[in-house]
Figure 1 (cartoon, rainbow, N blue to C red):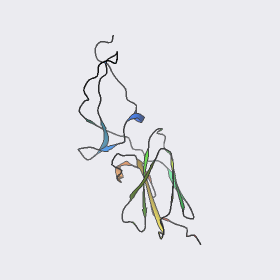
Figure 2 (figure 1 turned 45 degrees about the vertical axis):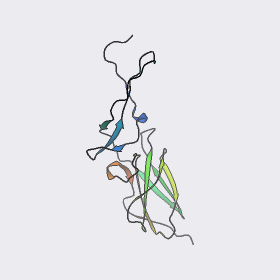
Figure 3 (figure 1 turned 90 degrees about the vertical axis):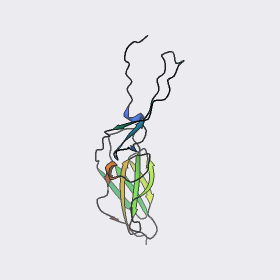
Figure 4 (figure 1 turned 30 degrees about the horizontal axis):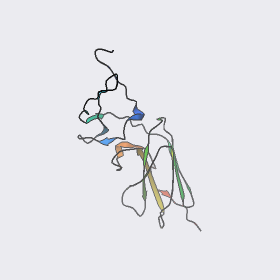
Length: 149
């Protein structure tokens, strides 16, 4: 039977999506409970704790436009991370959440009547809101859409 302090290691890929913390930064909201070695007794859940200090590293990417099909491709060494994709057509005022993906590509169709598109990819957050501090790749400028003729 173990005695004294015991440590548990939680891998980053098992953490929940990032959330907006009380101080305005992004991090993880976690809670835990202790299970006895024989798994017959459980503690109460801990209070929710805020863990800050997430790593956001910009990555290379590209946007490929073929007719009305738009494909976003980016590289990231973090396996198991999910990504939120935000799109802004020239007919939109702000970036809008478009979807979440577990892989490093995302495809969509151009909005009818739009002539340019901008895209931003950020690590997935529980709020699904555009946050410049979570962006890992974006188009630096609006990309022209090829008209179907």
